[in-house]
Structure formats: C-alpha cells, structure tokens
Image (cartoon, rainbow, N blue to C red):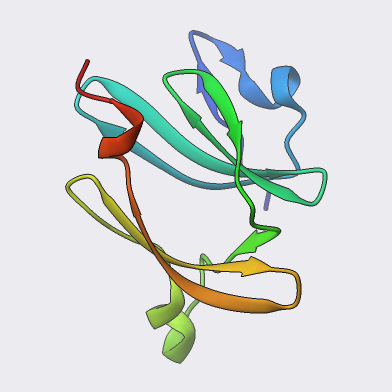
Length: 101
C-alpha cells in the first residue's frame, strides 16, 4: 500500500519525493507531518521541511508491537526514533518551534 499526502490538489510526493509518509497531525491552524526521504526522517510544519537526526521512527505496528507506535497529546509527540543502530524513546515538544505565532 502506498500513502500520498495531497494539499491544494497537489501531491506532496511530487514536490518532496519522499519515500514513506509516517504520520500527519493538525495542530492549531498548522499541518505537521513526518516522512522518510533518502534514509532520513524529516518533519514538515506548515509546508516547511526540517531534517531530524533519525533514520527511522517506529510506526504502523500491530498487535504487541502497537505499544511502539507514535503517540500524540497536545503539542507533545512520543515515539521510538532510530539513530545509528539503536532505537531510543523520544519525547518531542512542538512548542519550541513557535507554532502559536
């Protein structure tokens, strides 16, 4: 299965050439999404792209592995991010990105 994000009738894949769409949120009036491109995880806030230090983020798991999926509450994101060869539990706050401006 392939996932595409469409904004204003434009397929974002055609613009960014991402490899995989990871997750999408609407926070206040902003669109925030995570995606993989060229072996790195990126995030996009209000249509601006930023690279993360992660090569993968655990997501879309089922059954027992479900507990390793991304969780989102208010402006906090909890996920397992992979750097080099290990996963770490990451608590990421979006308030430092000045979304409320």
